[in-house]
Image (cartoon, rainbow, N blue to C red; front, side, top):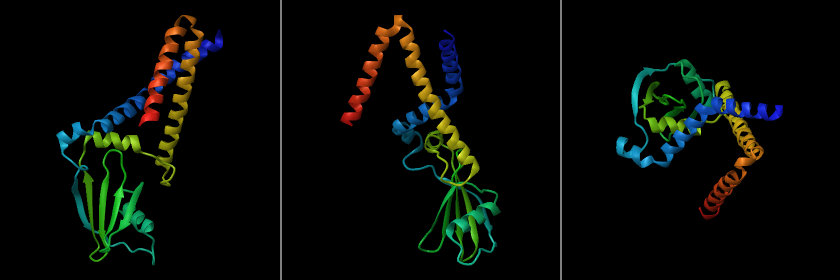
Length: 198
């Protein structure tokens, strides 16, 4: 049957296309599930930051500028514009956390003396994998983050098709129905057990 051939081919090529995504989500989940292994290698707590550069930022901010305006201006001035979080400490220091999959940075700006310290997070494989797993878009207002979010949505749609086409192929192959049904029931049962007892 022609439609069955199309479904099989789509299922196979989609699996090959999704391979890097599935691998990264699997590895990142493994890293989160076995944090103790990384604690023994790197110690407790988040990855430390190391100073990358220190400078005087003499830019002028608009009057009564909001924190987002200030942080964006600073990031653009030092060539680090992108998704970030910003806060003002009680002492007036402005702390900017620049999100980045590979090298997150922390910028600390002191309005009193206009000093700006830029620090880079030291690389750790588990931290990278967790950032990959938790990365999201749409809310940041940056095109690359939106593109990432669209890619994740497409990945989800692809996974749903992958599952449904797998179920259809299993049902079409009569010789595998009994063992396939057993696998389906056991898998659904284990999932339901965890869902109801955790």
